[in-house]
Amino acid sequence: MNMKELYDAAKSVLPNSYAKYSHFKVAAALKLKNGEVITGINVENASFGLTNCAERTALFTAYTKGYRKEDITEILITTEQDDFISPCGACRQVMSELMPSDALVHLVNNKGESKTVKNADLLPFAFTEDDL
Image (cartoon, rainbow, N blue to C red; front, side, top):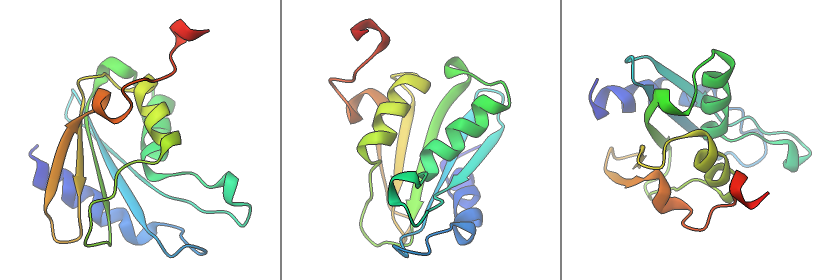
């Protein structure tokens, strides 16, 4: 699967985003080593702290299915925005723990343009289990 197919998977679920309050839809597509793609969308709540981002939805779904960190190769995040949007702080922390540090993170805008970084680059001083 190439990045275009990953982008198409994320774009196909973007309309399902529940962004009733912010009207800021986000979708993610997580690629696993076996080729499976798991998608996620943001789901908002009137109590904004209870909102769940697309990246975490995809990751939590993968873990629910029994996949783990070593099974993940990349994630693609897209929105309806013309600008590049990167994961929020909470998502960066979760991605740091639940994805390999060298997993690719593709940020794709509404025009289909992309920027790619490694997961570790998003949160260089992550809080880890070693800090406990």
